[in-house]
Length: 394
Image (cartoon, rainbow, N blue to C red; front, side):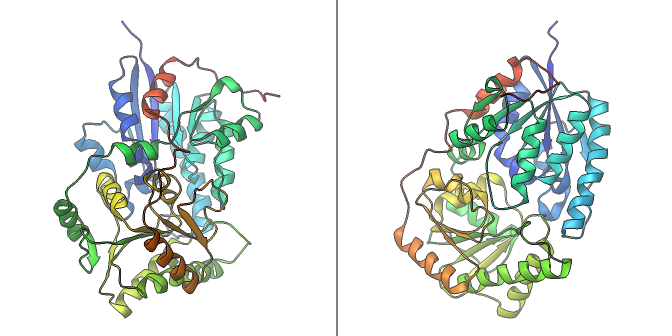
């Protein structure tokens, strides 16, 4: 009888769940692995995209649901949520007793999972280590790297950074981006079905995707000078107002996606609602949640992506979609010529947007691409020797 290695996959946001579907399927069907799934954080909240229904429709068993989000939309709420989440992950890992805990990205909930797993002597595999950015997420990402035992990075520069942090070379693998894999493999959906989906989930004007349209995804920026909760709200409010003014001042239809749960999200949401109610724009549709494959099909068709989402860095680089990156949330990531960066000035954003729409698609950039990253990660998880005590590699 084969004793299967237990792989515990942590899901705390809809985005990371969506981009990990190929890997989850391979882990579930692997002959020597037993997949465990923990869902927590915003991935359990309907307003941010509850993923449990989608998981259950696909036949996955959810082993643990961890309700840990403290509302507030500020840095205090993020810090307290992290502390509470450590307690909940500790209990979950004790019950499930996994051999490997798989953690993806740089979310504060993922740091909580890494801390709990490390203190319980669990082997940790980290996906997307070594990336850099312009926010607190970078510090969180590097902290998770130092707690992790195996590293599946998305590009050569990130691999070099992880090695410089003292990780053993035989534990670091450039597997490429799961985001890009999903963007390449997601099945095509006809325009009519996408339009039907948009009319069901969004509010505002109808957007016909058979014609040119723009997508906007702008999340809070969670780093910078120390500010009071009131000043954080004022800054975030001002940031998104600039983008709203820029895209509202042109005629191309817009699909605007709701921000994530980071500190400052309440201010962004408030600004969006106020703009929608006061201007009642005829060319903008506001969307909170959308099925992952539908989102990728929209991204493939879009004339430009505006905002500060990592989708502009990875998926758009390979798809050749023009991007206007607003602010400094992504300012240290590697980008190709498909991206123009702006400050929080509506005129500057508007000029960059007009330039990108005129330019059209760019050549595909393979920087974040590797063939079959999910398959390679699954095989490595099934064969790599387990260990718990880490040592700095000089």
